[in-house]
Amino acid sequence: MKKWKLVLTQGVVSGSLASVLSTAWLALVGRRQAGSAAAPLNAVSHWCWGDEALHRQQPDLRHTGVGYLTHHTSATFWATVYAALAASQPSLRTREGLVLGAVATSGLAYFVDFKLTPHRFRPGFEHRISSGALTAAYAALAVGMAAGALALRDRYEEDEAARLDPDEEPQPRIVRRVRAGHA
Image (cartoon, rainbow, N blue to C red; front, side, top):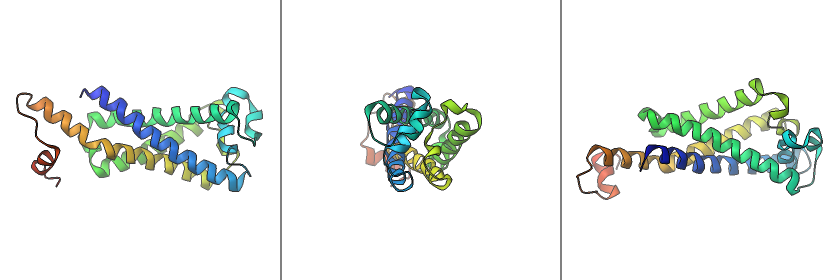
């Protein structure tokens, strides 16, 4: 499998997991702190609908749908950035490297979101949840990125093995893992 295809696959899988986990957290904490599970995601759509979205309580396609699509796209972007870095650095494809890389990428996303991004393009959910819950949302993002990357880690080994000796007959995955010392 081509490396770029692996990067995009990992970006989509990890980003989707990160998006789903962090969205679930935002909905849970939104219900507790803002009185509406939809409020934090509605707030994300403020880049499109203005500050009115920051105060929207009820779920609707206009606010919640745009908010979720924006959040999902952002999570997928950050997961793809990390996947591209991990593709070129074997040390980032170890279990520890993937977890630390996901945490670092989530931290970078936080820094960019709140220190470099103009107000209109910030996530928005920071207006509806506490700072502790905001930190936990970025932690959920990291967990999702790490889980997706860990699930796809073997594909990099398979791709590298195929490139090293294209004439050799493919071995079952368990044989490759035993030879590599992973079993």
